[in-house]
Amino acid sequence: MVDTCAAEFEAVTPYFYSTYEQENEAEPLAGDKAVVIGSGPIRIGQGIEFDYCSVHAAWALDEAGFNSIMVNSNPETVSTDFYTSDRLYFEPLDEESVRDIIENECVDGAYPPAVVQFGGQTAINLSQAIGSAGLPILGSSADAIDVASDRERFGSLMARLGIPQPPGDTATSLDQGTAIAERLGFPLVVRPSYVLGGRAMEIVDNITEFRRYLSRAFEAAPGRPILIDKYLQGREVEVDAVVDEEEVLIPGIMEHIERAGVHSGDSMAVYPAEGVSDHERDIIVDYTARIGLAIGVRGLMNIQYVIVDESRPFGLTVAADSGLSSVYVIEVNPRSSRTVPFISKVAGIPMVQLATNVMLGRSIAGQGYAGGLQPDPPMTSVKAPVFSMSKLAGVDTYLGPEMKSTGEVMGIDVSLRPAVAKALMAAGLMLPRSGCILVTIANRDKSDAVGWLKMLGGLEYELYATHGTAALMRSLGLAVTEVNKVGDAFPNAYSVVADGTVDAVVNTVEEVAQALRDGFEIRRAATERRIPCYTSLDTARAAVEALVLGGSDYNVATTSEYVRGSVHVEEQQSAR
Image (tube, rainbow, N blue to C red; front, side, top):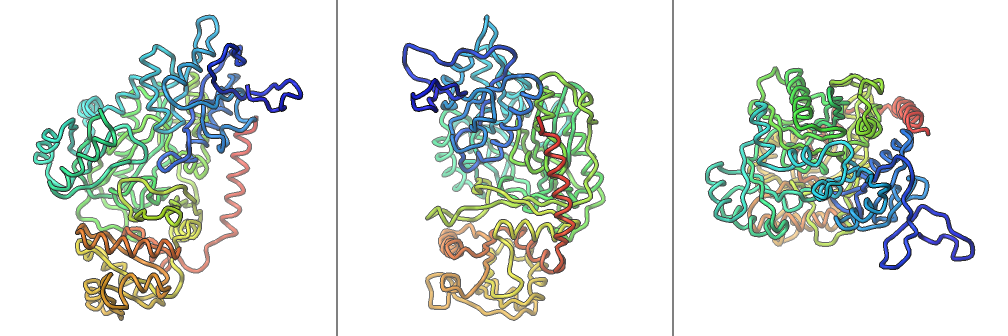
């Protein structure tokens, strides 16, 4: 027991840590109880959102009459505060430590069940070891979790359900991976299994990049298969859902502003998803319900989808289509996700409390909720990532399938573009209303940039661009100052950023060695000057559209009233 009285008085605290000694001061708690496995140290890919989930799970257990036992190794989180749980173990989140705690809390042969859904990938990775040891798991079983996590088992399930996935396979050797790549064709998304935040995940365009990648990926996840998928460029949406034995509750559908290929933790998400057609919405709801019930999820799950429609351009200005698109399942996570706190607040539905009660045996209907997709709220909410790149020297800032953000913020308004503007302002990524901007666009992105470049030309900006992008701008009738490439005579693309000439940068990544190096210098200079730097055309487009089409009045008073109402509802729901 942690001595909080410096040995002056007898300490009675709920804090414990393990030692190799003769005496055990952690006598097992009596009565009903459950062990909540936290998320461990806060790091990229495993953030404060899972601490939120762990805290609300402990509160829900207490409200249901259960003692909550928290296992976490990070003293800086709310889940390790003294008032959060009935008992806290400061322990590493590994199999040995967790099994020791569960066995220590055993009374008369009855082991307390473990709660693995709220600690992110760290906790869910422990489910198989706990299940193999014959220890109980609350909610989704170890086998159900494995069905969602194991590529071959999940693929077989999707085939039986008739639900499409991007074509893919798994490889355990370089030769096997090469054969798969030749069969599927490029581009491909390649990633290890069971890793945090998309670690070592990349989009590769040719066999040379692919073979180079496989060597690194096997090192990042030794002994685990490498997942190889056909990369489908489309609009990405995701849902969080609560599943009981009969129903699946979906609070809402979130649409990413950035197209598929950017990690969901680094994407901006819009709720309600205004760009999703009724046809697409019906498919997503149907797939989500069938997947959750077929896997046997009991509690929370997160599903990411990609909507492919070659005839539809990207952008918030584009209306939803008429139903000619195809919806594919990217992945299913049988746990809470980073968006659970966001969707819980903006939809007014206590997701963690609902899921915890489902895990304890209460139905969704028994808690006063109906299954299916819930009605959209009157407001639009936008989640935006927050980055700490200025504190991480030598790290590239471009967005890709590997997560880099360290937090998130949200903007709320009665319409989409003011909400986007608020989220970008809170994240420090909003364009100023006037000034200078440097634009360097990769060749493959130039045709997709025409629409928002015209909109940018209508703002009070002085435009700077490198040779190819400047030529494109001139062809659109825009006035532009051409600068040299990085390393050439001043002014060049690096110097105008480093000396403060420009107030923002748009730089999409060119997959050529020299261009990659030049782009890195530009992006690092922007990061160190702390000016907005967009590496995704979709994010840049959203910022420009928010300026041009969002208007100057962001309805702050209306938003404040809505937020106050949401906070009041949340306080009532979490009151104990």
